[in-house]
Image 1: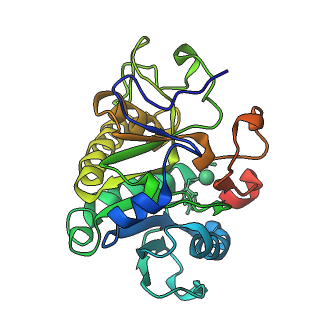
Image 2: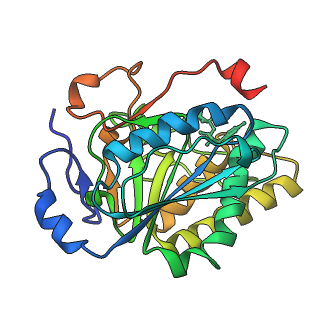
Amino acid sequence: MALNVLSTWLAPIIWDGTYDINVLNNQHNETRIGLFVFAVKKYIRFLLPFLESAERYFMVGHKVTYYVFTDKVNDVVKPKMAEGRILQLHDVAADQRWQDVSMRRMETLTVFTKERMPKEIDYLVCADVDMVFNDHVGVEILGDLVATIHPGYFLSDTKSFPYERRPVSAAYIPHGQGDFYYMAALYGGKVDEIYKLSMACHKGISEDKKKDIEAIWQEESHLNRYLVYNKPTKILSPEYLWDNNLPNGEYIKRRRFIAVHKNHQEVRN
Ligand code: UDP
Ligand code: MN
């Protein structure tokens, strides 16, 4: 089976072999890149391995600012960092429910992408912390609006995507619409694009909360809805979000960013 390298709206889908990193690195000589991550409550245990692996594989040779949000700023162990890389630690509330921690990322993004980040960076990459970089992730992932195909659904039919299907939710996607099922564990873009995205998703999450409902996959559902109507300009293949427990691994030559296995019950409570 051949995998697409271009979407129907002509956005590139990034797989190994589709780009020349030297050409792209030259284009991004001066580019400043942010990496946004939450490490709240027990998830702080994932932070050091995440950052250490980012030092090895994420945007090596470029200007990088880590935007780390945690409820335990004083407990953060800083990795050894290369020149040109900055670690910012920000305090954030520890919500009781893991779903609320996860969704609070959108609210936080609305604030930082409006005020602070436009002065500091050109592109922002948003990631889950329960992951490690395991191979090259560089400037080939930069674009105006970038999303990653969920590794569990890259061979699936649109009909079986776990979009929010209840019309009452702001994340609702009708049958017959939508292109890919994207995973919220890695997306990014120009700072102003992430401002627009986070405003829309945060608004949807708030509207749902007022109705006492929650989308099936929380902010991931709202992200998917946004991307149906605001098509990403670049799409990352599941090379950029892989989980070694998943089937169809034979398609994935490079496992660049992989899930750290966790005991959901233990780490979320
Ligand atoms: N998160 C956190 N503390 C929590 C719950 C979630 O910091 O108690 C953040 C963390 O960055 C995590 C992300 O929210 O990676 C998404 O949650 P999780 O990884 O549990 O979702 P999953 O990938 O299992 O769907
Ligand atoms: Mn995760």
